[in-house]
Length: 149
Image 1 (tube, rainbow, N blue to C red):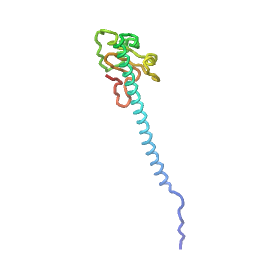
Image 2 (cartoon, rainbow, N blue to C red):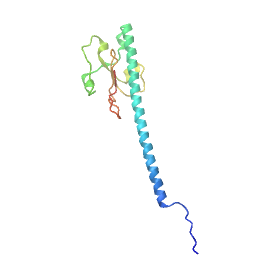
Image 3 (cartoon, rainbow, N blue to C red):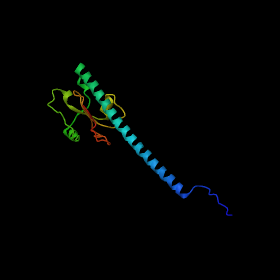
Image 4 (cartoon, one colour):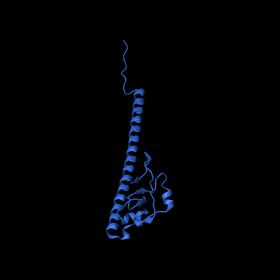
């Protein structure tokens, strides 16, 4: 009678299958992590845009109440600033007062109106509330223009 040798340990085939399954799972996790990061970044950009728009509305309301033009913060947007926003329709008419012009807000201007911790620049219209992100023109995932009307 022959003795049957008991196999101990795992076979090479089981090891390969386990490694392949782990690689597939890690690829899925990495992909969803990257998507989550991009989604969070896009939501932050849109949230910042809304915060700037809200601050601009507040400044414009102060301007309307007091008539003090110091509430209109920023430098008038140049035609080159406007040209960088490709694909956007600018509703520029001849301005009746300073509030109808488009203004470029840099970091210093944003701090004056209460927006901190941003590296972006914006073009805004105080009267209409239009707000364009000049630094991050489009979101990465769906290429949506960073603009609030």
